[in-house]
Image 1 (spheres, rainbow, N blue to C red):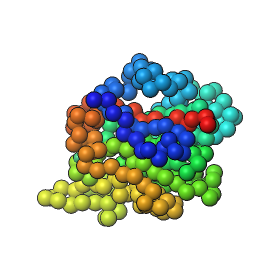
Image 2 (cartoon, helix red, strand yellow):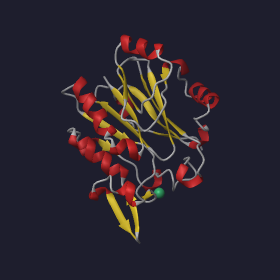
Image 3 (cartoon, rainbow, N blue to C red):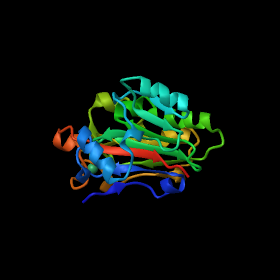
Image 4 (cartoon, helix red, strand yellow):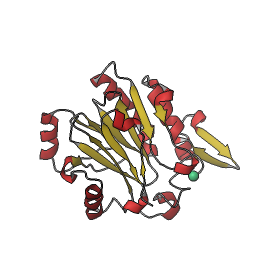
Length: 235
Ligand SMILES: [Zn+2]
C-alpha cells in the first residue's frame, strides 16, 4: 500500500514533505519520479535534485540569486538542502540511510538531509541545524527523523563502530549495532534543539525490518531507493 511517512507538524509550518513507501516505485528511476510528482500534484520542475556522495555539503536555496546559481550548474554534489523560497521543493533518495527533516516553527526555512553513517560521522545533521540557526537565530527547530535502518538491524564492524561515541553503540552476542537515531538526536541537541521537538521512528519504521513498506540495501543488496521530499507552500 502506498503510504507517506510524514509528520503533521510539517503542514502547520507551511510545507509538505515525507518519505514515500516502496509501492510508489523505485525513485532512482527518473520516469518513476515524474509519475510520483504528478500523482502527488506537485510541480516536478520545482523539485530540485542533487547527486548524493555521503558529503556534509548543504545546498542553500533561500534567495532568487541562489536559485539562479543552482540552475546554472549542471551537477550538484551534496547531501542536504536548506530551502527558503516558496513553491520550491527538494528531494533526496535513501535505502537505509536516514532522511532528516528540519524546520523552524514558521516554516521560513526547511531542511532535508540524506544522512548515511558517513554523513552522520561528518556531523551533517548538526551542520544543517547550525546553518538554520545562523539564518534565523530565534528559531525553535523541529525535526522528523524518517524511516531508516534502526539499531535492531544496523550491525557494523569495529572500523565503523569506532567512529561513533560509545553511547550510540549496542553490543549484543558478539555483534555491534549503531543507533543512528540517537547520534542524530545528540547532534541536534548540541545545536539547542529541544529533544521533545524531535519525532523519531521505531522498530516498525526500520527499513530493514519492514519489508512491506521500504526498500533496504542491507536486506536485498538492490539499489532501489525511497524518495523523501519537501515542498514549501505559498500561503
Ligand atoms: Zn530493524
